Length: 247
Image (cartoon, rainbow, N blue to C red; front, top):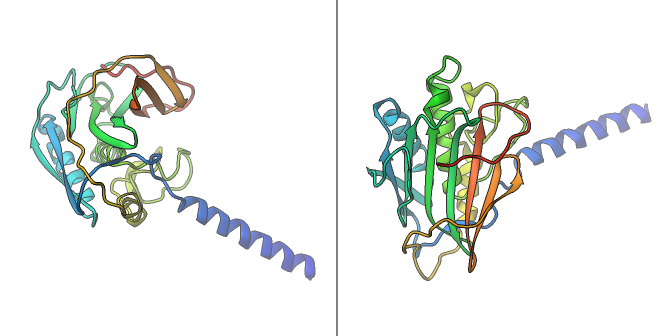
């Protein structure tokens, strides 16, 4: 009887630990947009075509439910194929970027812990195929990549785990993972709990230096003087991958 009770107790602890791990903090390091008040407004440059417009609009509306930030869609400031950054905002682009393994990437330029600009790319080479040409996959990838540019990491990175009901969760079946969940909004409040003395505005940082792998889906490029470019990759397939081709 005592062994049965012990086993039940251990099972309960294991379940609690699993639940706690699913709800663990998922900020992207300490990276955040500098601002002097909340909620702050972040512009999303629209460099996507009509196929993607509704998904960008859904993503913008979803993240604007946060109590600390709002996003607004503005005219794009770059060409979709090159998708160059614009200081102080996020440029969102779609194009056929080739069979390089990724569905989408998010890049942030950071000065110290402050994000200065960001880029999101979604790859039509894969989204034109039957597997990925669905509203569910498009919503998931757009939502997740924009979420990275806000300072969020993934809640879970195992494709075959049960869905957590958030776009910040890796999955092989995107049905219930198309939008943020409450844990994402709570994490944003934690990230942006403090205010800064300045806002993140300045000239675009030019890329230089070599890409370095942090993990299979995250790469960093050192620019010097505390400046870095981070690239998050949403791979189309599981398994080992090489360096992402971001242009």
